[in-house]
Amino acid sequence: MKIIKADIYSVNFPLKEPFIISYASYPSMAAIIVRCETDDGIVGYGEAVPDEHVTGEQVDAAFEILKNVLVPQIIGQSPFDIEHIHYKMDAAISGNPAAKAAIDIACYDLMGKATGQPVYNLIGGRAHDNLQYPKVLSIEAPKIMAEKAKKAVAQGFSSLKLKVGLDDAALDIARTYAVREAVGEEMPIRIDVNQGWKTVGLAVQTINYLEGANLTWIEQPIRMGDIRGLAEVRRKVSTPIMADESVQTMEDVLEIVRLDAADYINIKLMKAGGIFPAVQMAKAAEAAGIIAQIGSMVESSIGSAAGYHAVMSRKNIQTAELTGPLLFSEEIGNLHFELPYVKLSGKPGLGIDVDMGQLEKLATKSAKVKG
Image 1 (tube, rainbow, N blue to C red):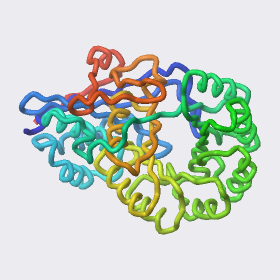
Image 2: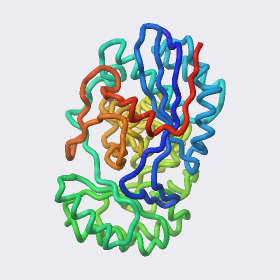
Image 3: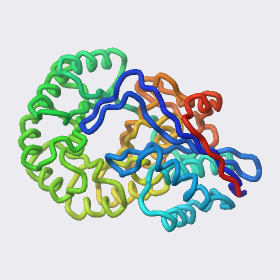
Image 4: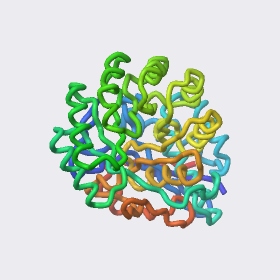
């Protein structure tokens, strides 16, 4: 079984409403879909969602790298040789984890379809009975966020994630307490700063003001890369700390372990380079007693399903936030959400169907690579 060709599509997924976080506002989400085919006619799909603010990747550049550098590395390869494929990709070009994730995900989809197994059975089996997801609220005025949070509770969501960090930290405090008052003390709330508070001093001061909000954790309060600073924040506050943008490689995980810098880490397939390295990172975290999450770059059903398969396979990955398909007004897959759970189908591979007509409609450009 060998990969003989691939089609690459640059797409733009329209959002139902703008997605606003500390470093950007998105009216739509750009992504790259890779469709790989083997010599026995099996088709597998992968997805890249580049983020220039986090991994340094831009969608047009990632498209060209996939077309000219990465996809040629896998033509003639067996998708089962996933470690060798990652070695070849890393030898061909450094970085570019989202582009590499697209190939990794497609390979796992192919492996699952070839063996008749869901992807999670290839990477550890079923470690959870079900998978939940939170309601993610982008940054808005405190009153609006409180109203949306209250509506989410009424809809049946079992936890909330609030995006903050865009402007004044005092306004973030107001946002958080407004939501807490709206939903009551029992609803789990986590907040994601996306590096917005930047400095250790501001982060510590703000988190101390938030102690009364009873937060599950606070995610990436300061700039990425400052793992020593993150450790200092953690030492000076009592609310648990999650590292996100600071977790991109296995080396980052080991440094967080060494400095005791976080209670949780947010592993994203787009940062890690796909399922294979993400699961390795989760295992390293588990050995150090750190709980992992699989987070989202706002992927479609393809990337989201891949993330949920990784979650399903590892006991140490206890939460997930892959809600991209719920945010789009147009999609290409059929990952099934049933509040407050996502339902993996159990079908071979990623277990989703891809609407090629819809994919071609949303594509802004495409390319073919053959052996």
